[in-house]
Amino acid sequence: MSDELLTPDQMAKADRLAIEGGPFDGYGLMLNAGRAVAAVVLAHFPQARHAHILCGPGNNGGDGLVAARFLREAGMAVSAYLAPAPREGGEVARALADFPETVRPLEAFCATAEDVVVDALFGAGLARPLDGVFATLVDKARLSGAPVVAVDLPSGVSGQSGAVLGAAMAALRTVTFFRRKPGHLLFPGRGLCGTVEVADIGIPRRVLAEIGVDLFENTPRRWRAALPAPDPLGHKYSRGHAGIFSGGPSATGAARLAAMAAARSGAGAVTLLSPASALLVNAAHLTAIMLQRADDPDHVAAFAGERKLSALAIGPGYGVGEKCRAFVAMAAGLRRERGLGLVLDADALTSFEGEPEALFACLNLGGVEEAGSVVLTPHEGEFARLFPGLGAHVGLSKVERARRAAARAGATVVLKGSDSVIAAPDGRAVINIHASPYLATAGSGDVLTGLITGLLAQGMPGFEAAAAAVWLHGDAGLRLGAGLVAEDLPAAIPAVLAGLSAADESFREGPR
Ligand SMILES: NC(=O)C1=CN([C@@H]2O[C@H](COP(=O)(O)OP(=O)(O)OC[C@H]3O[C@@H](n4cnc5c(N)ncnc54)[C@H](OP(=O)(O)O)[C@@H]3O)[C@@H](O)[C@H]2O)[C@@H](O)CC1
Ligand SMILES: Nc1ncnc2c1ncn2[C@@H]1O[C@H](COP(=O)(O)OP(=O)(O)O)[C@@H](O)[C@H]1O
Ligand SMILES: [K+]
Image: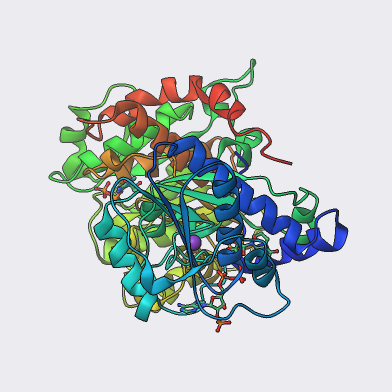
């Protein structure tokens, strides 16, 4: 499957460009779309007693009418229901004229669990919340128990954001056209799509270049080439040296999880930078990971120079407050002066609640051109603290929120969750769906921080390191499944890395 994602506006442009370039006109594309929907219904619900096709006023409804005709020709019992007054002379009117039976008003819809429902009410053109008869149809379809096949998107789901506008259909399968939309990958939309199929309707791949696609599913294709590989003549420090800051004696586990993940990602050396008070408890639990006292920012800066640290992470279990802010400022200085990569997570983000500009200013101080990459890894709670005004409630898509945050911070942002979004300050963004809900367990985010830090330490650029780490973390979660605890994740990374080539293959070219 292809990994490019198109917003509804970009998809409309793809349609336009395809029609201009031929060979299909708008009705030709609609015929291809409707035929693809009918094929999916016949392939997956051949036993359905009756197919009910719910058609809205726009082209989504036109696709439904075409599907209804093909299903009827294939011998299925079909009823089509249509919203009033399709535009005269338009493609929907043509599809209606070509449908050989009388269509019924939407209000007449009634189905049973033995039937199949084709939801062709709204797709890319959804412009406002579903209400009136459309909201009633959502309830009726759900109560009927019939499986729903959605055309393009489940009606009510925003293709742009995955948000539910008013009410939305819940589909078992969704057939979309040419390329998927962000709403197929972002929750809650993703949870309403069922299995998503992408149909080739004759739009050529070349239109993608003209559209300037800037959003992708997070697949290995996006970062595979930048993944570090050891130099045959290398030594441990040439493979990168990651430093992870530990919290105090009762909060050391998070940093050790991150440190082990950094080592598993391939960094040649990892040092836990621990306050004196926690040295003994850390020492009791470390083997391959080195340990260094770190109570004074100046000493850490000197150590980083002597031992050639190439990336630092601070935040997991560190503690919120002035000390954390001071160490973040020191780390930001090392980034500017020595090009170290820097990952800020958890307490390092929360420590700047109420004064995020102070953080962004210290990250973006001018100076050395070789400055290393910075990656921020907030979950929604931390994100809202650091980016007030960009929280989940503001009505922007998760992609837009992460993009704006990345631009504001001048850093790559990983906005974590069940549909993690990774965004770079230059606007590049990916949505990750390669993950497991079993990753929602304490310490899992600390492992992610360590993976990113380890990849940065090996010289991978920030956006690619973050995207790769989220995918590797997700793959480990998928492999481990039920019963996973955070400690299992670093240990699973060698198998994840070994399986990467095979995973790579499955994301080769998609249709056309
Ligand atoms: N373009 C192409 O060549 C191809 C497109 N294809 C197909 O077309 C679909 C996009 O078609 P589309 O742009 O006509 O939008 P669509 O989703 O049918 O809705 C627009 C209509 O709904 C109305 N409306 C919106 N929200 C509403 C609400 N809440 N409650 C009530 N009304 C509401 C809106 O009204 P208006 O805002 O104008 O008042 C307008 O009348 C796309 O998803 C794919 O299936 C394929 O055939 C391949 C070729
Ligand atoms: N439902 C889910 N599906 C997939 N991944 C999830 C889900 N919930 C959380 N995750 C992932 O698990 C990790 C949790 O990180 P975080 O919230 O920082 O937890 P902690 O601080 O306990 O480690 C993140 O990488 C997040 O994307
Ligand atoms: K639909």
